[in-house]
Image (cartoon, rainbow, N blue to C red; front, side, top):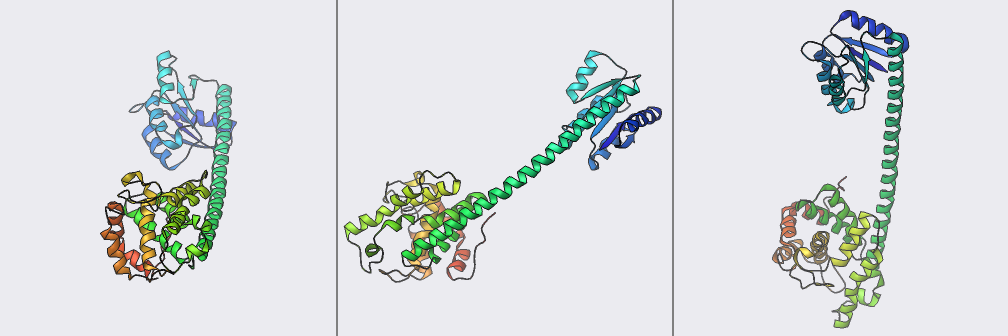
Length: 348
């Protein structure tokens, strides 16, 4: 523990230092000038401060207020040594942040008892703070571990869905990366971009309930088959509903609404404009773009330049214009992803 004594009298400094030193093993520093003491306390953390009330230039009340203004001295005990027993003076000192008072001339035994008690209190305070910091770190590590496991499960499940849909899992990876770029481009926070990146792979989770004959049909679907295929969005939302984590809640929004259109002509709820969750608006572009660029049983893959032009052409009809603008702004990075030249790092 460290104690700071501030008094403009050398004899008082020596006397208080001797009395305090006899009652504790703390390291004691002394200052004649309160301003010098404030400067010294910037680089040194004290556990108890004793300050004289009457000093030239800056009195004890002003010194106490200045010290209390610092975050690391909000709870440090401060004893004001004073010969003024006036009630208003004490109230002023208390309002400035004084913890206790010692009257001049003081009783050495009383001073030692007050110092010992306040140092004991401070030691307990520091111990509790250290314990709280340790617990916070442990909670942070445990939370990070849980999130990592949640993310791993999501990626494995998403890739299983893609294999069933005739893909190798690269589609969900690219959709996730492109979605994160678009989300960043429209100004969403890094944490929100990260959640979208991790939730996007589950956008087609409802396809696990769609018959293989429809999923893998090489030709055009009938109207009845189209209706069945469209059920994957509500099925996916039902699979993900009532989630407790922000990640699963976001995945539910995306699964439910990633086939809605900006002009209201989408499905299943015919939402339009900003009524469509922004997460779904972001993923809609990434999903359609990558689907256009991918070979399917019913179509050949488009050149990425043609698919890019198609996304821009659908701004304001199929897609949110702001998201299309972000897609265009991030095109160099998206093109690198599509050509296999880059892997986006998840924002942390």
